[in-house]
Image (cartoon, rainbow, N blue to C red; front, top):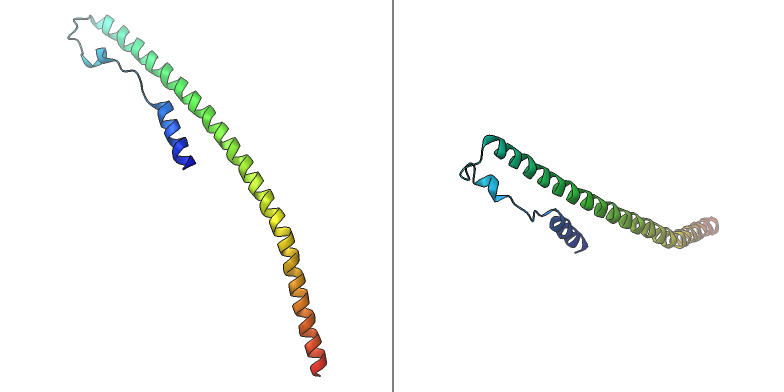
Length: 110
């Protein structure tokens, strides 16, 4: 669920919310070649700046999300270690007890 929400958040950040219909109309506006070139260059600059800003914001969000996931992973490893230590001690005691019982049976059966 959280990964879907995060994915949707990133998609929302990267969504284009501006367009440039002047580029679609071609030269029907009666602009000179120089004016069209300037318009194209300015439009490209605006799109590039918007895209770079969005990428930077999304990158920051990804780094923050990765940091949270790494903290969560560290916490899970710690919890797992805390759980495994008593369990492993218990298993060692059980194994030693079973070994002692087997040795006792073998010693008494002779």
